[in-house]
Amino acid sequence: MNQLSKDGITGVVDLVESMHQRIYSLGGLLNQGDLNKTTGLTGLIYQSIRKTTQLSTHGVNLALQTFAPMLPFKVDDKKRTNWLSIMNGVIGDHLEQTDNPLAMDMSWHHRGQQLTPQQAAECCNRTPGKVLFLIHGLCMNDLQWSRQGHNHGQALAAEHNITTIYLRYNSGLAVYQNGHQLAAMMAEFVQALTDDKSIDVLCHSMGGLVLRSAMHVASMAAEEWLNKINKVIFLGTPHQGAVLEKTGNLIDYLISINPYSAPFAKLGHTRSHGIKNLRHGTVTKDHQIIQLPKQIKCYAFAASNAQNDANILHKKWIGDGLVTVHSALGHHKNPEHEINFPQQHQLIFKNINHMNLLSDRGVFNCIDQIINHSV
Image 1: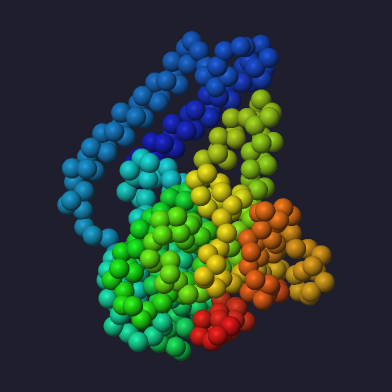
Image 2: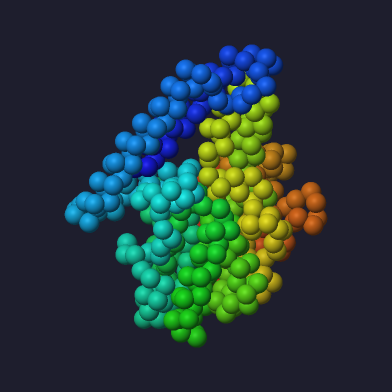
């Protein structure tokens, strides 16, 4: 937290100094120097503020490092976990780069307990039912699959003796980074899993991009775990990008072209790599267009706030408030960018928003049919 405070203070100082200099130089028209740095006495004052902030926070960091082993263990309660998940979604890449203790590590959970991949495999081996992985979306965590008194995973586990494993991850990291981590952990898991077990996966929003990235990694390395995946259901995954991130990127551009408002673009640019990846649904480091593995049955669920079929067709670009119907179904105006879900595996739900995909009974019934029947 101390590191985050320092970064916040120095960031605001940079922003204010940049505004100060741009206004002083009439938007840069009368000054050919650095538009973001002041000079003379003014510049010395800003520099002093930065130095003081760095020295004071460095001292606190040393103290925390000394006494950290003596601090009492904190219960990972739901409110704290939700708060950390939001922070990690917004600036999680920065938290990890600065070794901030608030950065979340990727972990697996079953019935409220954190497990290693090997422990998760042993848990699945002890039960006769199927295995279901659940991967959450941006700024969320494994606990938030429970919504309005319903949890798709818990309901499936209770009705069909399915073993559910929930993923928790830093959603602010680039999608490909989480994809590599998940692929490595899946390899460990499958190595300890009995041969008679197969895996189904339920993904919400960004979680679907993370899984697609992990499957691509496995495909490139011919990893065995990919052959254990049977069915994958994507709930509102922005395969072709999310509306809000595209809007955010446009606002960044409009702000940056005005010399007086350009410094404020820094605030928009501080959003995480994970969020920026949502602009086009990016799943690899080099922005490749990745298709779904042919041997895996994949299903795309799209939601629309529209209440009737006519509005869904007319307002596909609106979608569930965060992801358009076209994006969730993998559609693209360029056929080469299309994510090829079989037509019969594309489902649209009316009068449902992005988050209600986690609690709607009609959505659950379709998930149940797909996972527990030959659909």
